[in-house]
Length: 543
Image (cartoon, rainbow, N blue to C red; front, side, top):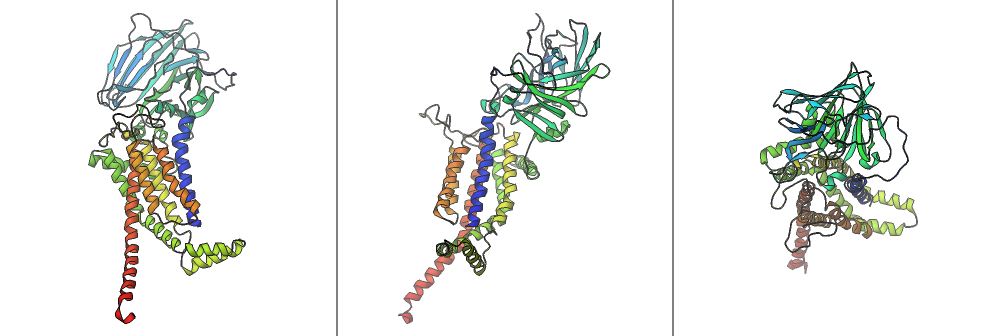
């Protein structure tokens, strides 16, 4: 009974963790509205960026185009800001001919706006670029210089420096004139959402003392959120990141709003007339982030069991190198994890079978000592001792398997490699929910959308079969609760990425096969006992 209760507690806890991560947070991190509701002005230790102004370029002004191996950047002369940042290796849809993914969301306020004084920015300055384009490759570096003069006599040079094979680039502003601002701020805007789902999952985030600070975008519209000592700060969604930082050291950052838009600003002191920043705009790929430095790999939060998730992610990539298919790699990775935990699963299953055998005697004890809990516990311990059963011996293997399960789940949740990765048949994107389009069905099905989640339904069926094969213990109420779990998981997994559903389905099938193989010797033993009894009944000497 105790073991059964602990198993239910573990499953329910796991269900709550996954549900909170995949359902509650998605609703909590809703995309920002176009206009926030009226609110009182919130106090702030730092000035907020200015509201957007008229950013129309002067007649004849053309954007400067930067081409690198990984980026195609368009910089507008008005404000010398990022009008678009396209990632050449990533497409907007699964169609290989679709346009490259652009991280900049069009709007009145664009990223890389420079704030020189409280309430004053370079958003409306007409910059003059020193060239119309820049094309660099490999380890080459190149820069574009934008020059402008403000109406109040401030001379500004805004310099962008790119490397041919990097998602990290530098932004340096040189300021001269009658006055010198003490600090300069660089403003970033949210990443352009790929889909409504990714928009809901986008957060403002910063790294402070190696600790991630994550805030839903809508929180920025309520009150400013200062991060005094940030290594970097910006915006992130499931697979992409746009953050700013200093070349070295920490800087104060402010998560706030400007003109009804959520923004993140990082500040840096003006030294010798210069203020320096770096911007990373690219994929949340662990290797890419590690090469960029600045502890950017901390943007990939693998949870408590990161020490399990990271090796599993490397193993997934290695398996893909062999198979050429991430779906097949997930199947093999799940099989390897199941093989490693097989002895633990066998120990748990064996103990559950032993506990099942003494259930009738335990039921009699509960009935006999229903009014005396102290005597009941004493008699139950004696029953365990006589049958050499430890009610908690099966719990430790389950606990030891938990880091592997959660680590593998988190590895697949954060693997950008699964984005737009096909598997087989109708599954052409392992990062998206599986849907099989069937002619004649309504275009929109409540709670499901378009198509039928075949893989998810198979996963639910496999989970039900797994529960049916599991040795039944405890009272009927607990058994009914366990049989209800597959329905809950099926509903919860409907909009999960198909890569995660595939993992869970394969894990269930392997567990079913393992349970079947472990049950065969007991079944053969029971059949042999029946045969011996029948032969004894038919022996002439026994009649």
